[in-house]
Image (cartoon, rainbow over all chains, first blue to last red):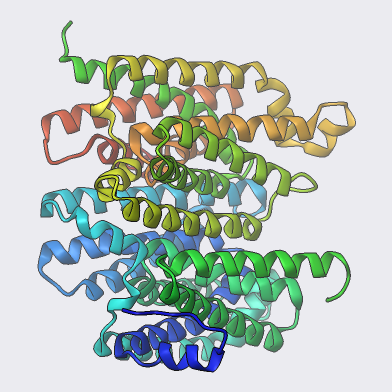
Length: 292
Length: 264
């Protein structure tokens, strides 16, 4: 590959789009970024960042179990992420037993439960992997993705999942927003808060599973939390926030891919660095009173 | 010696690390800093890769990285408690840097990065030499003692920070000190159970202890005891079942104990 970055940006973009593998990568990253940005915005609003991260970890035992059973890896990703979402949702319900159901103590309890679920799932994944027998050379692509090896079929699957997830979120949107902003009031006005929360976690799990196959398990989190966090720094408004989140998601995802193409480093590094830089700028702007 | 040498090393280092993790974990859950603990455990991964990329010892990289990020998280939360979005952003960048160092390491051709990655991610308790085990035990014991030394004021500030501040307790300094201790334990425990599983050792025994008792001293003792039990159980399991790596076995036992407390 003779990748040359020139100051002629139009020529650079033409070069980026000259290879089919690069087009696939850009499409996959774009779809994943949009889906992650929208679900991530709700995740940040609901303060479920930790749960989101734990769900992304579920992909690891999922992939290992699918490999062991001889199933397509995607099946494992989706099954484990959705299952993990139900377990994580269950930790919220379990807190209502002998312990206080609300307040900081219950929240900390729940975090401990989620952390235990995440670590337990990873341990199971590792055991499955060692039973499967030495596929550790694939560990790196499992964890950090192989975006330049995405096929047409994978792009199509991703697009279908993205459309379904976004459609469900659109249907769920109003009660979800209500339940997220004021759960007590929403419950009092007849919104099934528990069911809505569980449904959202399952959607989050599906989005994470689809994204993890493209970006790798460890970097899903970048597309999920960073664009949403930047948007939330800039505006409390809903439509504007969601739009900004999508714009930032696409920006960092494509920027990362382009920079990765012209250098020898992975897209993940550039994507996360761009995201962190934008977040720092946004927070500085907010502190200085430029926005919000 | 009753045990083979590698098992005795693992037992010594593992026991001390388990006690330290259990004690610190109890405060981590109390203070609602589980996510920060998770972030620190991933920092350990990046730190080890960074050290490998520039050719330093793993241990140096681990400690430098975790303590540094612990300070960053403490500084972010200096005014209030660090919100999970700030931690998430730090987290994201740390992982991105991990990828960067993995690339550096691959291009420098310094051996198999997959081995380093696997070792860092999942630990290598059975691979410790006697010297390493003694050092690990010393560091873990030192951390546990340091924690107990600040235990009372830390407990006070964790439960009611405004009241503690009003009665003159150094809330900020204690917050920093606690996260630094957590960084040290994270680096230490990474060598035992690995960066990805470390959270299990922090959260599971402590979470179980918090479920079982609200009494702080009983809770701390219980957390340390459960962690120790998980460590011994896990080591024994992986000794008998060859396919089971020690780190994974320890976490499975810890998660199992936690699940039991959900039922009880």
